[in-house]
Image (cartoon, rainbow, N blue to C red):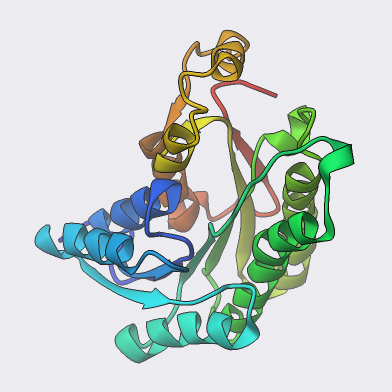
Length: 249
């Protein structure tokens, strides 16, 4: 299999479905060996691995809760044990839950910050022991940090933190030749947004109306950009926030 990621090893967190699954498939299609992490859906992760291996690619699935240090280390160790190195980390694990300020609870806050922010930090912490010059960290943020929609204080707060952390780590890891960028999707059609009834809702229609390119996003729209950020083609980019929402900002 030939591609622009030949010989590279990638870890994608939260890759059993949605954006993470498509990123894993795309990275593998370009020649990377991929570790497909899942939190609860082993069946979903196994299907992604089967999709990849059936096309001649290399992938393994590994369970793990990114917000727990031992699990985060285990996810990265899987890459080293199976493939002997690590070149690309995609911090994609994330949860979202919306509510007005009056509805915010401690549990609502901690669940989202633990996975979306602490999880990103713990997996990155484990990864930097193995990443070398030329390594790429891709943090999946969201355009919500720019458009700040109502009833999303906690979720948007986590994604604002992702943007800020991306900038800090780009400076911190730059001297080692490791690049850190944020890839921030707009509204994307996934199992989650379809299952929650968001796709087809009035709010979705409003978002599409204000999107310059006139449609919602597909997982493939994001995965293609992830391949670019993982590859040497983006070797002069670090600390960037790539807004991938069809022009929404």
